[in-house]
Length: 290
Image (cartoon, rainbow, N blue to C red):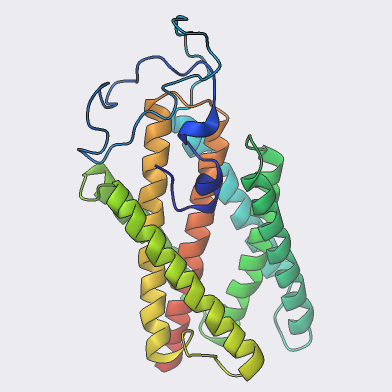
């Protein structure tokens, strides 16, 4: 099963990675061989077979397998780079009337660069830490300017509320996942993917209407519809987190290479950025309606 996260969807911890040396028995807590892989919301071992190993060859010992500490460390590094980039952009790129256009231009450029870097990494066969950290830095610049603009023109407390809201969503989904209140199955995956594609299609249509018709397009970014779609966006982000947690759990259980922890950090960072932006937009609409 693949995550809805763009990084995991492209490569992720999927069966076709073809890593050698991970056809040993799963670690403790992994589903037993021969069990129904989706009976309890689990996925088949993505590292169970080595298509290049001769038949009957003994399974080599696993070394350098990914651990939860690796994922936490890399995620902290990636998110820390985002925060540092945002703080520098907030301090060095003012959004007052004299510098607004310049700061917005730099922010849009940073967002485009971050998008390109994310695509390059997504099509790489292996995670490249330099690409991931660079993505985080440019994404931080974009978030810093946008957050500064929201704080200046909408309300100084909105940004902190969005940060706290993002943290609460992350903690809530993690708790629900660990308690097995959320079970990631094929049906769950299919539902989230269908909802995400529909959501993105509507956003693209709204953007086109806004670009050629002026105003707010179809109204998906303001008013009652804006609030509704903001909530939907946050819920989708929470679902992405659950899928990402499942991928990380499977990677650890089945001995994914340690380098995959960078990919996990990359995917989790992208999902958290999604949630933060949707939270920021929703709170901005609610603050504007007060």
